Length: 174
Image 1 (cartoon, rainbow, N blue to C red):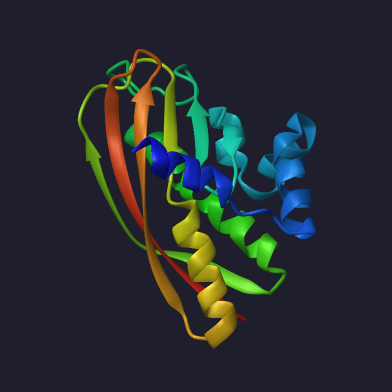
Image 2 (tube, rainbow, N blue to C red; image 1 turned 90 degrees about the horizontal axis):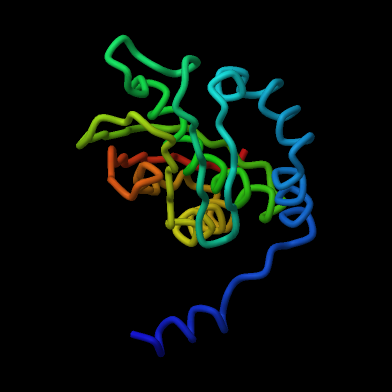
């Protein structure tokens, strides 16, 4: 297993200049907030934040609080779904920017499982970045729509898994 990890680090994909520019905008607190206010205002109100984004994966954090709480003192399932989708969608946006092509993206299917009550901050982690980069490259090469299933897991700060999601994205060159 350690040998595999060394190989993965050795062949880690480098972002194109457009991909790096997009990542830098997401990593900038002010520019990311402007992006959320313009494109995803509910995510901004709920307090979603990018903890990590690279070619391998993305982590989105969601605070526990009055903005996204249900009457049962836990994070509302729709708020969890929004953060989970964002952890996969940001990878899709990064892959599209990296390609330099005009590519449309759309969620065509999703599944969710809620395993515990989310009554603390939750971080959603998707490690399927390479799948999305491959899908965007495929649609740019062939012009045909490509379906890609991406999984993300929500974990509270104490390490308990509260939910897991599967989103099927359709990407298509315009």
